[in-house]
Image (cartoon, rainbow over all chains, first blue to last red; front, side, top):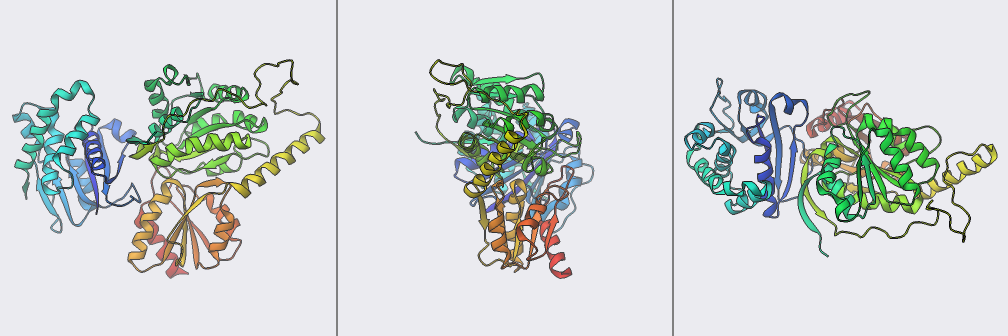
Length: 180
Length: 356
């Protein structure tokens, strides 16, 4: 089993930390993981993306151009990565701010309106966990308990009181994600 | 004690491994994409636990000369930088090589020339393996291809540096420095309480004074010293060649690639084999000494050899010297901070097979 994932959006949306939590939690399940961020001018200018690979075998290239799953959180990223999804692959996107929706017919497209939901829940920072919850509904690669362990590992201790809120967000993501 | 599992960036792994290897000192200056090494050490504060010195120097030149001084005292010392910073350190590095001192220099390579870009590249191969500074000298050069190796090669580098009294370089790149992978960390080693007998630690009445210098104005003496260095490099070539092979047994085509490019080529090997093309990969782990003998042996059963590196073609020259005309050798790779994609490698190989 190998799952090659790209997560792409604006800096500040929690793109990199979502990837980190995925990698941590997959590691808890004895999987091989790699987390390759975009760094430098891209990150400083606003857009951020990270390639996460989860595999039962040794990971060869940490950098790939085609993905099993693309998690897309803004229009620029959709324009850039829609065609990078492998035929038969999965594209998950947040509809917030999207003017041109994904059009491919040879992949499965899901929509998770996490920004809107995070607003309703009055906790905008759990946005990325809503998205992650949605992803795990579609691709149940990692157990929820390991995601919580991953959260504990990657969040500084002073934020550990926020974990129940994040758990709720993960659950909400599972509920609201829908096939397009 | 057992090894500890962590998820870390390559740069962080270097820093943590240096503390655990019992390093005595790190001297550095920040530059992207390797600043996490200094940053991690400053947060970890090993000077409060193992006693390891961590110092942000006023410049790269100062940092390498602090390494020179520390090494002269027989201490396990290191520095790290990225390409433009490594260029600044070259004067110090050639002095350290000329004074036959052990140390570790980590280069997390970015694209050049000049300030270039902050994205990953492998365009410092010539500089690392052929000298870099002036004069006839070599560094021992190790090329990590994973976060695990970023950690493991720190201890190995110190061992080799002290064994041969020679500076060692870890030639990494921005991709391996910035990415996170699983890493098993070795237990904490104690810092050495003794120093080698050549170290300059103050002259006791019981022995002659130790002199550390890279200067000899007598040409005959200097030539004898040059010969001594050549003998040492030949011994290193004989004893310390390291490489890894993937699916070379039945291969008809061979990729040669190190570091990030070797990871990309592993994927390219899988893609080629799915298409029925029998490709193998030889990954040099030491770039100096280069695995020339093994590449020459493998060339006997290959139709052609591709050297893949993120440069305009540097290692390809060593591959060609190793192959010595037995089969065609080609170079392929992206530049300017772009990481070569596995499918690009496959396409290039196919074009060479069809094109002949």
